[in-house]
Length: 67
Image (cartoon, rainbow, N blue to C red; front, side, top):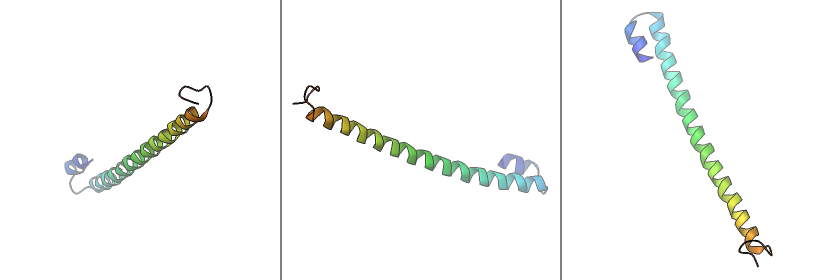
């Protein structure tokens, strides 16, 4: 959007394009941060799930690796 703003110097559209570019960049940055946080939480949940399975396998008779 910066290119649009630069192509129309002094117009109302140039100001709108510049403002939109700033808003979009911030929204995209926030979205990326939220996606990274979600991925981290999913990885933690997966590790917890696997740990639970491993624990159950270790203590249940007849399970692979169990007593």
